[in-house]
Image 1 (tube, one colour):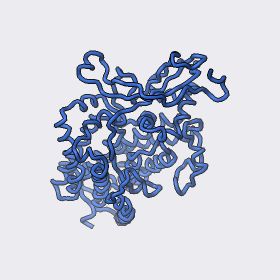
Image 2: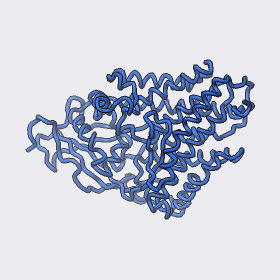
Image 3: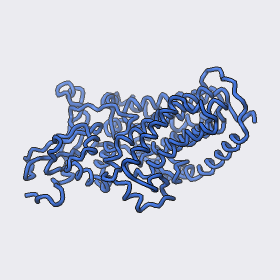
Image 4: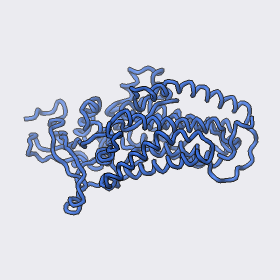
Length: 473
């Protein structure tokens, strides 16, 4: 079938696949370096406890069959190795069918992690990586030109990401309709970046322009992805510019980068297409059957997207093949942060020598300027932002965090920027307090060197010590 492939998109496919492999590599590296404290046998939310109550059909995973910390590490590092091989272009050296199988390996391994990841993996970009990764496996390699159907299905994912995010904003917080959300967002977003302070202090009229441009990019431009070239390429390029603006303004894990990867599917990059044979019949049958399946599974996400009760970041099947997305349907006006402290004193008093734990990405000490971590994902830091919104968001893991800090657990301390206690000297008590944070003004920054100003609000967790230890006086 002559219409089945699009030779002019061979360079777009190459860029998309290598960029996707890089995102996979970051995702597996994040898992490998953080899982012990979060999901390990002695983690805050242990995988063995989870799989004991959740059947395989609801959460298909290799870890349903067997779990040990060593096995999880093997899966995560194997994912890193396969992703690195794909980044290097190994799939182009294989037969077409073998290249597809190789691309499905990181998808299956990451699916196994996400499906037992619980709260730590309850982010929309997990499902977005899985949905994109599964579909991109069928883009083919150098043996065949890119199939048109797969390219359009990748645009269909991008459409749902952008249009769904635009709708949830219009239906959600009134500040999106009033064009005022960016008066607060850069200050209250989950994990600010090194430039977020400067974005917050942009003139308010420019913030209005930013919000209006966001509405156009998310509610109008997505429809242009399905128009003829060069309009589709222009639409994709505009989306990429918007995503790069978001990369500069905050730390959103790999959400922006995977969205850019998807946008490449609509770009027709100028390059002469190499001669390739016609697509084999079995490949055409597989791709068309896949398209029919994914379009069928799109029914529930589309119904959700157009519903007045639209929900964000929901998976409708345990394989995460077709999902619904969205972000910041509501924007906080005030930033709260949970500050965790410990003391070596025998008796926990208000005037005890309380020492603050410092997190890598979460705002802490007022003089500690935010750093750029994305696309790397600091899972604990992100969940601490939710914990500050309400203790209910932290009910299943915050107690485990405190317990491991009282033990000076090495795996947990590796998730932090700095512990105030040396190895072998755990604190006797740990407490948590809630503070209100705001960005300093230009004048305050010059005078104090601090980018944050914080004010004590209330006790979040009273001084706590390990069960069985001597009672607090």
